[in-house]
Length: 431
Image (cartoon, rainbow, N blue to C red; front, side, top):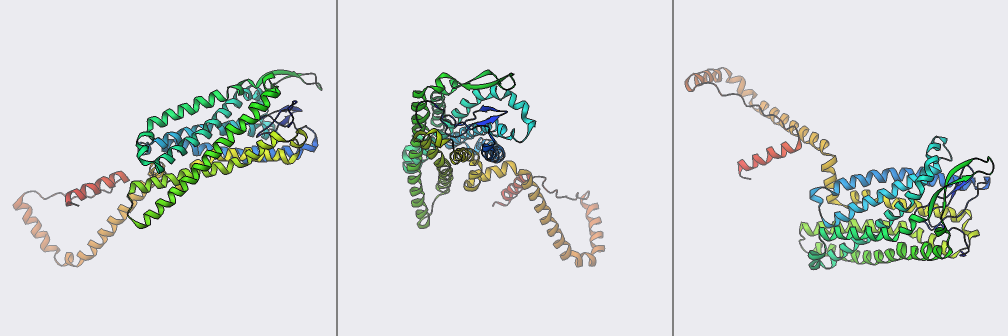
């Protein structure tokens, strides 16, 4: 695109609210202007279904999944250096998803539902702040993914060095460095938009909107920071590093799998391999979701404004943005599918009540079966010797003192009590 002036866009195109152009961006390098004529009704409807409907559903499921991920990863049995990165990643991804809902989903839903008119009234006050927060969170998310991939590469390929480098304290320091670097890199984003008052030429009434600042309109700033720095720092550099390290990790896992077939492998090594596979899946999904955004950014840097404002390229921008959102929402479900330990801890934390009920029910069933078997075996002897047993019992009671109390076996009320009862029984029998 020529540097004479127009806005550029990486992820989001502008939409028109009540005949006023409102730019909604995420990880963007500007926006392509879309007029409010009826010929663009299809584009607005595409944005509505892509961001308003699909984006809202993905964001809701993603935020729920990220909250559950943080709860599981904070468990004492999950306390590792990798968990530090994954907790930070869940936080950043949640911020990205919330920003989607505020800056993309709700404004596009407004096209079909006037119930959001109060939100549209305050949207110009939200956008200048939500925009840089979303970009800081996305930068942190990308380089946190790079961080735990590098750590996993060291742990798998250089296990002797992992004792020194793959520690919780180093992971915490890395997360802090990533956050500070991302914040500094996105400081210019904080000065790209401002809330202003404008005059509607048709009704001659004033309204509040937001507009680009002189910094954001500067052609040099647009080319250097919007396009080239953004493509290199946000896309090409992390994409190249993650691709190379992921290939090396896949090879290491294959070698380890072949070794498992030839010799006995410790449970610790199997857990390490399982963790590596889980993180490889996270990185693989990240790379797939970022491919469309790389092409989108390259098109924005090389094509003319008239071409970028056409329907196919605006739809590509919508799809690439939706892919980025999917990447921020899917990690929890990848952990559940590929992470054996994560899945086990999750079930212990959130399926405990079901497990307790199942254990108690199984114990009761076993007790009932055992009682029935004892009753069947002893029924004949009991009928033949009942009177004699009664006489002996009374005689023994009078001779040896009071009768012994009947012992009633109470079934456990929870899985923990059942396991404790089982452990005590094994201790008594010497097992």
